Image (cartoon, rainbow, N blue to C red; front, side, top):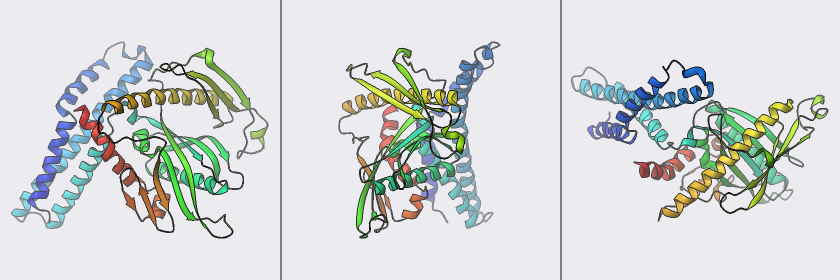
Length: 376
């Protein structure tokens, strides 16, 4: 049976969410934005209308989420009071408490994802490190881990480019995580170098080996976000795709290679951005997806620059290096540890099967929480 202090904690957390989420202001904003959708000429510009509908639904989602939490808290309060009059059982009160806590924690976590880019789909790229077959096998294990996590959360995974390993595993893979909410917001915690320590099945002496693979996650932009791409700096190549897909896959030049001569607007430094896409056998579709991936990279560069500028002025804030080693997976010690948050688990098999939510939550609660508080 829960205590009065536990009930008070639920009530206090719901009150805090009302404040942090600015529920009263969101209600007014929702009504104003909804009115705009009722204009007679609203659908004359479909692209603009779609963006407006997305905005309305986004606000509505927060209002519904808060109302659900509030309802659970009210039901818990009633159950607690009814228990005193012996109208409900201890088990019923505890069940209502569990429902309220679960809903509160989910909304608190969503409150950590308030940046514009957090709600977007994601592009996830994995590159194997030095070490040949061992690191290439590790990269394929990470690909499987993220695929399992995505599928468990209702996302669709699409492989846009895959380079097989020499003997086993993969050298690199680029995939999009689409079709759900907040894919980038959750997966941004995975940016960095992932370290594997195990007795290698590819080592004849059975030695313990260390392998590395890097993970890069960027927001996948859509048509509602304007990103300028200079046509004069774009060039295309086509090539025959390789890999699974039947005999026809090697007969048609459906693979596309996009080259973009990028120039940093601040430093003037020049760099060629190279994107390959072999997602389908339809070259026009591959071209369109490659262009979308280019826009996503340009958006991400602007985003990282903004974050770097914020980090400079935030004295004492813990800095996150995108290219640093973030997590170690030590198989024979049955331990996976995140070096940024200190969170660790002994459920190695579960983690490799995609159960990484606790790592994601720990990251968001430690790093995204300070950003959310800063906005208030």
